[in-house]
Image (cartoon, rainbow, N blue to C red; front, side, top):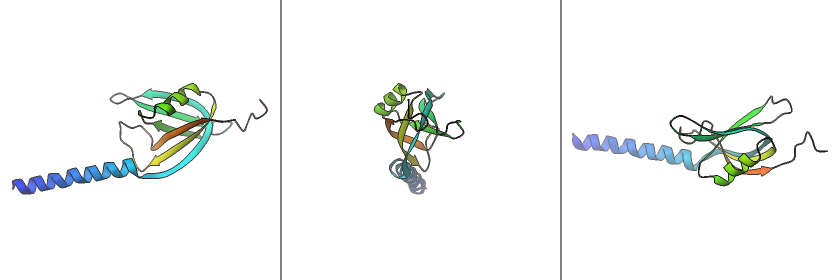
Length: 122
C-alpha cells in the first residue's frame, strides 16, 4: 500500500516538474511590439509582479498588456525611465503563467527607445 501511494505521489511530482519546465523553457511565440508606454507598475497582494501597458494606436484603441520577470532588472529600469515615451519591446509569449510571474502570458526580454511614427517631425 505504501509503495503504491509513494509511486502515485512520485508520478504527480514528476508531472508537475515537467509541466513547470515546459512553461518555463518553451515559448509559444517571440516578437516585438511598439507603442507609447502608458503604464508600468509593481502590483499584487500575495506576490508583487511588474505589469505594464503600451498604446499601439493614436487613439489608444489597442492596448498591449505585458509582464516583466523580477530578475530582468535591465528591462525594469529601462521601462521606468521611458514611461510616456515611444518604446519597442521584445517579448516571449508563454503557454501559461504562474501567479508569482505576472498577470499576462507576454514577458518582456528587451526594451529599446523608439521614435513615434505619429510625430516624426518633432
